[in-house]
Amino acid sequence: MAGISYSKRVMDHFMNPRNVGEIESPDGYGKVGNPVCGDLMEIFIKVKEDRVEDIKFRTFGCASAIAVSSMVTEMAKGMRLEEAMKITRDDVADELGGLPPQKMHCSNLGADALHAAIEDYWIKTGKIRPEDAKHRQEQEGEEGESCGT
Image 1 (cartoon, rainbow, N blue to C red):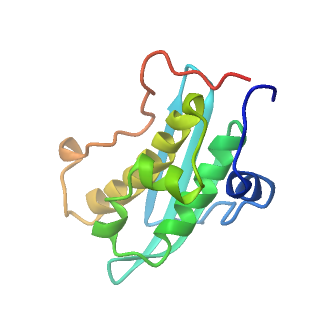
Image 2: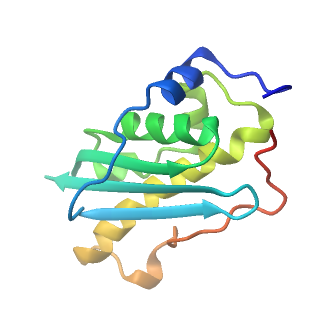
């Protein structure tokens, strides 16, 4: 990966990702992708008393995408849903000790997949209507983003 420098935390979450896997019959499910670079993230949540009781992810993508997925699940676990919805791409990147500029879109996918899973849960429980969801499943990334090499 010539030209791209990763923080120690990014490398740790890439080499030893947390919360990998799938939850059978999740309370909420979010799936987002970036067709430009090919990254795909899925997040599964179990909710108890309006908190993220358990969270797992499956990601197909670069080192940053995997590290972001791992970090966003660590950040959201145990949080109230309303608080987890406030996690931003910058929050994720900051927790990872920064991401190279050409990889920032990966942190956006992680936050979006989490938000999509929470909105899926809210739709299932009647808190919001499907048309009010801001994070549609299978979102497309911003134009011109590329994972590079």
